[in-house]
Amino acid sequence: MDEELSFAVVTWTGWGRASFPARDDDLLTATFGFARAIDLLPQVHELEEDFFRSNAHITAPDLQSMGGQAADEFRSAHPEVTEDAVQALAWCYTYDYK
Image 1 (tube, rainbow, N blue to C red):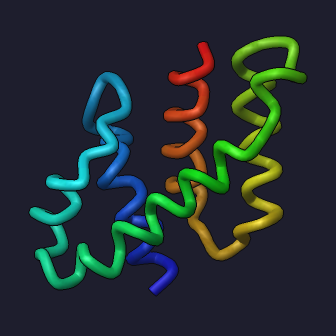
Image 2 (image 1 turned 120 degrees about the vertical axis):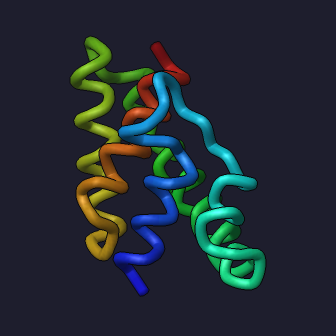
């Protein structure tokens, strides 16, 4: 389940495929099917919200530090999430706060 949820995060963000974060519910639904997406979407959105609770965008001296600090905080709270999913969420975070 944890790997599936992590893959859902990566898919939803567009990490590795898009030039900027997609955050595409329809893409996640197309990838996993409607029935599975109904379960995964709230979890994906919750993980994004948890990541964005970081105040690194206020305290970090630069974009790279900001992403790293937020990612470290998130990893501590969610050790079950794969590194790919952490990086996908960090990409969204740094994009929004650049």
